[in-house]
Length: 568
Length: 52
Image (cartoon, rainbow over all chains, first blue to last red; front, side, top):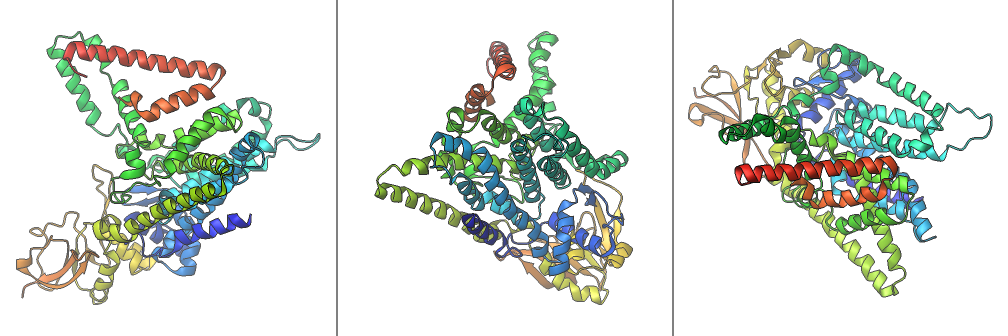
């Protein structure tokens, strides 16, 4: 147990050091969670004035509320800051490591110990350590982007499910309706559903595979399921009731991000039918081979498989903002042989058959929700993979370490040294990319420059100068609200919302605190006023017509924002 | 060619080994359907269009 606390300490340090400064900047969603948490804390109402909503509307989108709820106490303690907003992710990210330790204890250790008695006590510790230094998990635990919180709740729910089986033997007369592990599981899965949209698919999938794999055990204990199911439904009832009124609360941006929204498959199908027509192929044959079901299935399976490609996992990662790490994947390459070995050993010896099957299926269902979207492979939507990945890798690593004990002492030390150096080197590369390369190459992904801009705007806002502010680089109103911060009453009084939602589902705020924010900041079309302040993104403002008052720069020296006024 | 990716092949054999009873039968049957359909489709594309 002492060793676990050392690992948790290491994990906590990796997740909290310079948390407010790295990732550089603050992503717009993080700012939205932070400011809504601030509003809820002070007034009990969100930015739309809704009283304790079960979904936070922001930028025309509905966001799950858990991240904001968890941020509230830390905003109370630390104030409205990047650190306070991200801290719940870091804290629960560290908590996930403890959960994985206990999961490994149940899923891996008994089988390993059965295979080689006494040699495999270290499997849970290996799993905890591997997750503590897992770049993917460190990356996601340092941002308030929902998934670190979601994975904590999902893994805790899985732990509850798995642990509930061990408390199955009961004495005569004991109450059969209460299995506290299942009740914990119901609460955790409900928490996951309040944390991230993906969980609304992933949780039912995990529950289904658990039910299928352990069906023979569960059918004799069905009474124990009644209370947790009712408890889960009670916890979810506010969400379910609200989603009847507003279905978007349940689905979020699922429609606009799904593969079915993308025209790609429809165009391929149209092309195939046209070519078949030109070849005079009977329509029923053409439609048998080229149909929607096949094309969408192929598209989804291709996207699904891409989450297991070495290119995604080890070399390139997610190419979509803001999760990209230049020229680097999310996992240590040195994990790969241990993962393959663990996977192979799951096939043959070790843990009980059902546990092995559950572990494999847990891995397989994790990226399913990501494969239904057209932005693939997606590091955030497939983040649940990190738990079974770690467990299987720990399984392989423990086997290697146990075999090394039968080697001469020098060879064992050599192997241990090689592993220590490999993992350390991999972490150093990740840290370098994270602290040096991302700020230099991708500061715009993290909306860098908003805090600096707000500081520069503060005196102009105080003197109530007319300001025309660009909309580029993330919704500016939320950064103004976050960094000033705007008092709740003043926010609700001055915010001017645009009712038009664009084709991708994004809304717009036309102004706040008297600042005008055109939806499209076209320099030629912006009203020209002698005393007004114009704030353009990168090179939006025609420099021949203005006097530049100030600038905000990226860490690489390129200008982000230009503050200017018309030439007198 | 998703069914020929390394990952799919590993998972195919892994689940074949781990599943049992009706689940295993259903699993193997669905793979047979996929292979049969894909083979027919490859044949159709080659014969009609001369390419995949």
